[in-house]
Image 1 (tube, helix red, strand yellow):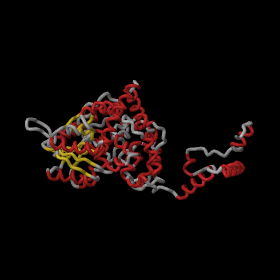
Image 2 (cartoon, helix red, strand yellow):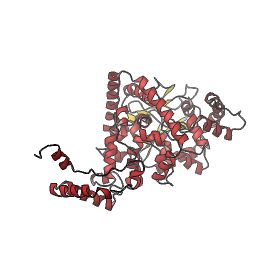
Image 3 (cartoon, one colour):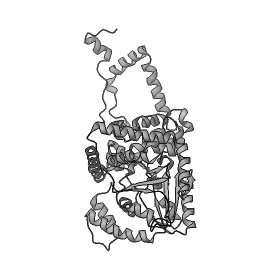
Image 4 (cartoon, helix red, strand yellow):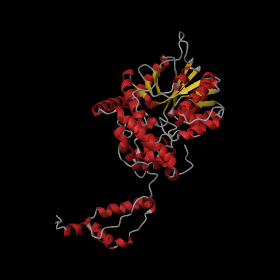
Length: 473
């Protein structure tokens, strides 16, 4: 994502873009309302969240064991397994698989983990054509942008903006702002690409250790086409996507779709357990699974922060976040925006690089209230916020702990702590501030840009209490 500009600059650009804010306001309101309609029974919602959270707790608690079982099951299903510790290693593995298969044209289903490793850019540098086939991702790719939401990549664009992007790239089609017609036009283009593709790449929503089944949730059918039409299928998954058994899937699928888009269920739920068998007429001739770490094992070792890995990428925390609604996803400058991005990204890339993300949180708690697997996001964000300026324990898990500590700010807080810890000194300072209230500044940096600076009271709290006849006991 764009790290050329500072976070402050990106935030300023977003706040100054009225069209962007209008797009997000209407979209988020719609998604929040749709989710609310599906969870009207509070008791049922609590029960479902408890169940989903328990399943994910079990997955994370037993992650090493389940990954070993998953690899064994996948190999038994004639699926080749590759382990990638870093994004660079993952990209090289995928390129090697494609190169050995002489694959030059690739179609890809929607996948945040491939966005995370910047696979498109890497394969493009190797002269391999890779095409996004999810409609939102397709439009974002045409616009040479990045997704601004983990579920709806092009949600930052208005209907007119989408129409212009499509018309600029495919002038042979008549210009239209009818989304259904644009979808039909895109389908005509993509159908040929599916048939011509040498390989298909997908993400993974859940990987079942018990059976070696890869599960993909989608609405458009493009994921199914990517994983069955080309002769080669490569699935890329973060190691945290594993679940223990098939019986874990129904509660997770139920709450995922309702939390993400307010749907009862998605149009397609693909369960892939092997490449094409001898008696089958379709499906890939060979399958590979790339299991990506990229900092996840470090997060898993950190008992305070490992709940981050429970995330099922529904985007509900993002949809309900007041900061995201005002800024959109690109202002974060990261692959994962919103509360989950604030929590995950600094742990993966380090506090010295992304610690300032923790300031993009009001601690309103909305994300924790709607998280389907009960991740305590405000608690985790607050902990990370603390680690940006102090801490020692987490330095073995997160790079850059304490790197954003400012000496003057730290010195100021030390003085504040000393004054408030000494009753006599506090009384003296309170009296002086009250007397010199006329010297109070009218502006205090960026803090006063959107706030009115209050002057100290004419009387101290003790004086007010005395005037009210309250004895100091």
